[in-house]
Image (cartoon, rainbow, N blue to C red; front, side):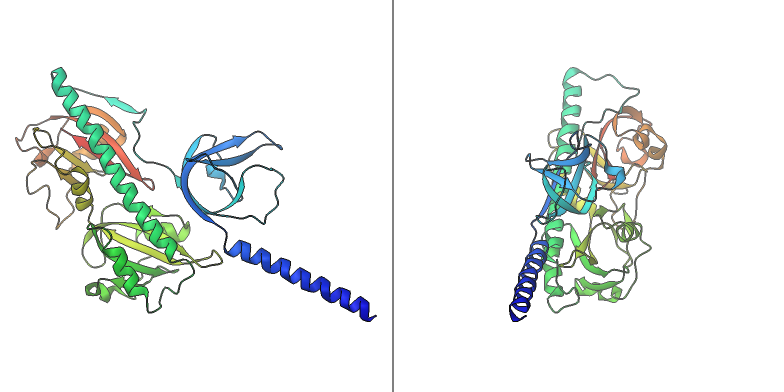
Length: 359
């Protein structure tokens, strides 16, 4: 009887170690963030895998139905789960933390060919080259900024968002990019619980769940970038927001970063128009001005209000991601012409698009 009880004791001790090992593996699983392709794998009855940009293969364990599309480019963050057993025997099992369609700079197939004015071969080369250079530069700036914010959000994993170190952490995030002017932490309900700099401390306790981007990330904990909007402090900004996770991978809150988009545009496009008579204007598809480079009237670049070229929303720019046409730009054209030849393309971050117009 004693021997039997001892055997049972050994069994439970061994089982405890196995459970502990499983818990530790789950807790300390390697987190990856990458973009790549959702691929249909015709094995074991068929399933969808994720092939990262570096060729690594992952088996998403909880891929949402809307992402089950062969060839779909996505941005994905997840934790490798080495303990789970699967029948597919393909790739590393990956528990998804967030997933969005990858929409970096691309030359769209939806190219609009509208009216044109006479351009010499040299002029056409200059405007199309500037269009490509400006779109590529702005896309890289957005992606780099977003990657840095994602890294900061990952550092908060498992930390007390209302702890004494929160303020210093937010200060570090704010000083990482000149375009950032406010960083805040939100709890799960969308209430601001910490903010930097201190001059915005009056916003602590404000619930911002009705802001479109905050409502979206609460509903679906995936990173996002807002459209241009007025903040509760009366500033005009775009926000990039990331969910923050506990060590057990549940959402504990959100890291919200407010930026002046004109400064992002300026840092990307600075001096690209030097030596030319061309201008670059970055807008939302609804005509809202994000930023510019070149010689545009001061009324267009006023940062104290949301400026919009209303006619653009109903023009091909509002519908097509790329193309050229003779467009009415209103006060944005220094010479005041009724219509100007414009080439445009699109850069996107987290499904929010900006048009990059060259004229």
